Image 1 (cartoon, rainbow, N blue to C red):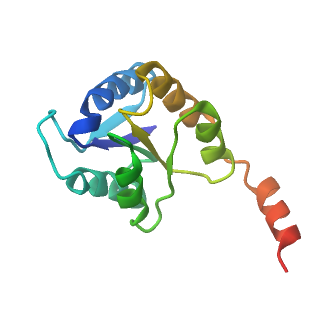
Image 2: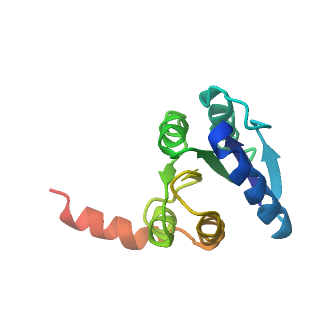
Length: 142
């Protein structure tokens, strides 16, 4: 799978760890930066990451920052992106199963590294349940 990844300075260390994990799993990684812990303006790195997913250049994307909140907000402004901020395994699974999230947001200051790596693995392995959830939504619509 081709995966776009981008971070600000507060997510840089996790970005590097996640890139190594993705490569070890056989994924192709496209890194949109940043490339150090020097302070940067995060939209300059997050938006191009999300746009690569929206254009179909990458199947999925991962964006990182201190909390992941700002990164998720920027990514979700790109048409065709469904970015989910995840902080545990359940939110990662639900983001894929229920929301078909194509971009994952993580916060380096809010999630321990070992958990962040588990979240990435689970998020990549989980499929969209699709019709099952849509059928339930349609059943309760007026």
